[in-house]
Amino acid sequence: MSADQVIALVREMLWLALVVAAPILGVGLVVGLAIAVLQAATQIQESSLSFLPKLVAMGAALAISGPWALERLVAFTHRLLSALASLPAAPHGAF
Image (cartoon, rainbow, N blue to C red; front, side, top):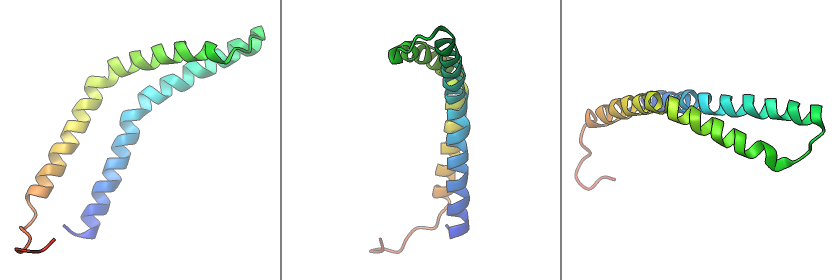
């Protein structure tokens, strides 16, 4: 496997991590922003107030987008293992 192939795999891995995490982080961002606006409007400055709604919303986003994310991760893993299986065998005694 050449250095270009390794770089392409690492780039694809990082992009996939971003794409898989984006729905969950996006929901957390939107809910956090909504709660911050609500806290500013009502002048309730309780830091623990935002934790539970964000946790529930992110859990729901994970439950909804989980099968899609798992499908993407399994497909990438399959491509990665297929690429590794096509590598030539190392000489005996080489590390």
